Image (cartoon, rainbow, N blue to C red):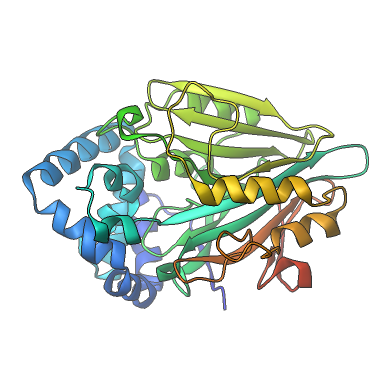
Length: 352
């Protein structure tokens, strides 16, 4: 059961984080205890000289750039009773994992999340549909945050336990929504100690529209690249934004041609990336399947014909936690539990 917590307005970011941490303390501490990536990779690395240096760099840059979100993260740790180091490592896992020594153990469990998206805007429908794929450690370690800020803005975000809202998907009361896909730049393409993706997506929840969201992405000196599917509900517009370190950004506007995005760069082509067979297989499979109606798109995202690299994942390492469908005409975000082709909707959230 996906629990929802309504919080705010709080005068201080720390207070909001503390209340979230307190409300979900059991879930957060459970994730910390059972997350193999945290326990077997991130924590041991954090106690090395190289790890301590990288954490200091991430701390300095992110706390300076986003002091209120840093306080929110600190509040979450203290409210939950979890170690701040554990919460920090969860939030910066994508910025740290590429720098871990390459061992058989690390390569077998470093995969922390994938995702698949189908986007289309035509005369009859405008939707963004997203499979939230994550490491099996995230099963039952997620929740919905509905926050109201002192300035009157509110946002709703699907949140991983212990992390800032949201590394998955969310929307705000300005009608700006997003879904996110990880991308795999090579280590040489990563800026050690740069701005973390969780801080950027937390910032997007406060954007007043598409232009502001793009400006927030452009102005962030990212460490690791990312793919953002930005949804402007009011103006019936969707764009896919691929980013990399060095302020490299490519924007692709979605139109009548159905756009499928997995976890590799598709249009920011100057970035050297890891050869990800799962993404390539999902891209090939998606190209074979019909995707002109909402039903066909849900069926596509429920496809598991490729047993080794399915679009809809059920373990042993990666698991599709849910599917989110943003309907720009209905102005809603619907969350599907289980295989989306079966159309079991657990939540229908009004965006405006």
